[in-house]
Image 1 (tube, each protein chain N blue to C red):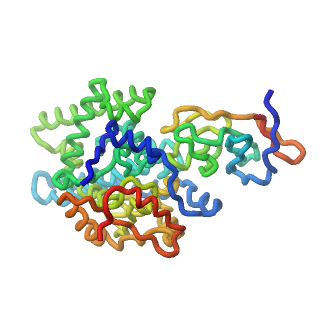
Image 2 (cartoon, chains in turn orange, red):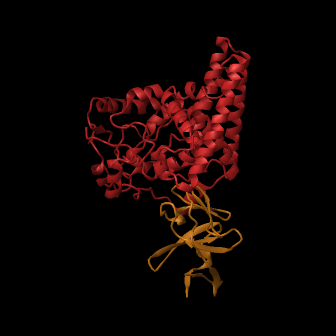
Image 3 (cartoon, each protein chain N blue to C red):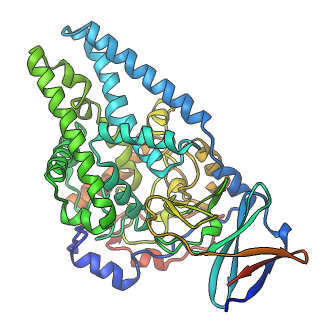
Length: 103
Length: 359
């Protein structure tokens, strides 16, 4: 059974932005949309393992900083070459003034 | 000179993987996240403006060329049209391939497809080839886009100022792909799922070229080919000139773009044709930054970079003595000196470079 992990405070992420979150030796990317929705995906691009937290969030798209591959942050779907493999996504909830990720 | 194998399936390719040079961690200048986010921000407006200028100029120049055909008065208009077709499209291929020219994805895709056709570069193959160029910039056996290998094939580069080699290779690859096959080297960096698209595009292009040739035969004139195809030859010189300045003569097998890439100040017309790719160190370090923000990025990090070449002529003058020595068989390269304000210099990058620094 996956655990809910306390990841950060809501204000730690700016609107339409992403931060890196490490847990148990793995990297995750936490996103906040313009509508203050929160999402979490694997932290490394599926193309060449670059940290997505250095990338650019545009609406619901994260663009990898190395080769400009794009993913949908809601579903993890790979949208633009050179990425072909989808990102793993993780459930996120807001509770007690914190952002929790089910990992 | 130490023997080098630039093929992607050779000994150096294997060596690069084993030594950790392939897909390595590269140096990046420090930029605070808010500033980086602002620089990466996309906008349609600058690229729309530049596309309107480009296509309007192409229509005007081609129109004048046709109106004055077949007199010599048409020549300057064809030369201008050719540079926009055979050189400006190289920069559009590049920037739209990165997806950074426009904010709107379909706009990038439309210009990318047009530019790929003009440059005879398969849009699927070259997207993957360029991704590899960014992962393994000037790493021997890994980078498929090394323009001047050592020793430089000077005659081929000279001939290519008229697009001869590029067109020959582009057409040969198009014919191969249209026949349903891929070159083994391109197959090494294009995922299998993408390979049928390569073949589809090649077949569409073949049909367009065939129709253009049929029209030329029917009209008894090369005029249709002056518009489609031939400008890739007579207008290639500018993109070869600017392209050769990017990495030539600098270190190979280093993982710091400050050491293997050159930023060159250029005149505004060349910068329009080249879409500011004269800020090439900056582009390689941060490929997410759109072309129209590169001057700002340059201003922000220039104290962390080797000084930019003050002009194209200065860059050529710096490069030429090294090329001459390489042509004589000497294993030399230009060692880039970092300014005192630069981030701590990791000398192992240069020690790992092949050859000797030029005096």
